[in-house]
Image (spheres, rainbow, N blue to C red):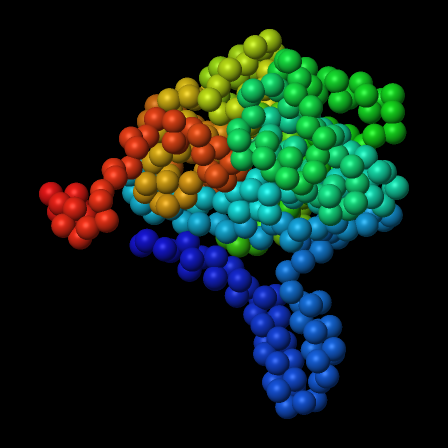
Amino acid sequence: MVGAGVDSASQALTNRHTSKTQIEIRSIGTKYIQKKLSSAEFLCYTLRMAYQGVLHKYGILLDLPLYSQTVSLLEGNTPLIKADNLSRQLGDFELFIKYEGLNPTGSFKDRGMTAAISEALGRGATTVICASTGNTAASAAAYAARAGMKSIVLIPQGKVAAGKLAGAIAYGAQVIQIDGSFDDALTMVIEITNKHPICLVNSINPYRIEGQKTSAFEICDVLGSAPDWLCLPVGNAGNITSYWAGFKQYHEMKAAGLPQILGVQAAGAAPLVLGHSIEKPETVATAIRIGKPARGEQALQAAEESNGRIIAVSDEQILDMQKMLAKLEGIWVEPASAAGLAGLVDEIANGNLNPKGKRVVAICTGHGLKDPDIITKDMNKPSIVPPRLEALEEIILG
Ligand code: F0G
């Protein structure tokens, strides 16, 4: 059924906790109308109940220092959209898209960044730095701006999508291009933060991992249990590490089960599949154009422990999936974000994964608007007609 995702998300929203909250909100509303509450009291109650970001909702489950000072853009709480049009073409199973592109700066990085910047602010840091293929840069810049901190971002020259670079600039970061790869930039930020009091906010920072666990919590809360399979793109390998840690923690608490994890790299940047680092990684999915993943070992461990695996797909498969997802489901993601699904399709086609009767969640990590050029560069220019009805009729009706 088209739109079933809406059902399932709203089902989740009516889980016990939420419906209790809704009843409370209604009774507070009634009291306010009956003038039993002042405007200030009404505001106090409703603000406390409103969604206030991942640290507010799941902070108690995260290993963050007490001195942290929350800096939030109300990240998280992203939709889990049921993708029936796509799953019908692939087999008989339930497929959900966790649309992380709907975070405040357009990618999943905001979950980890709220945690890292909150810790940095609480400890009195004034400047943060990161190496980035673009999304971390935009996210770090936005959260640093909100915290009143300076941000410096190092990006590989000419290899960052327009929407990400524009974001970093708009949020006021000092943007520095490195005549080298993301891996070179990461080495440099590690060196400089070892020498100077600047806070590193790449996913080497453990608080990034803590914050990013919250997506696994949300998935379990919405579905009522962990999915059978989770597929996601892998670059520097922080996200796969976070998901696995999050699912394990949730399973210990609530016996929610554990997914098998399918991590997917781009074939030209697949060090975890090849078993060695790559000097010059290349892929159209610039977000995951990484040759030496900082958390590579943990990613391999997560895949193995979960009884899953890390595979590679070609750029063509990634771009085909990006188009398919947009055209079949109305979900436009940036190329790297389609890698997880492209890997799922590849595994199904090769007979390595039988999805029948299973529940699969694909993580779509960043919004399509981050990288519009990839679509517009090959498109036919939209037709131009004079402003007359007959001309319009001719072009539409032939
Ligand atoms: N998808 C997108 C859209 C990303 O931006 C990234 C990483 C990944 C997937 C991979 O996540 O690194 O945790 O394995 N982007 C980083 C950046 C490297 O700098 O924005 P990962």
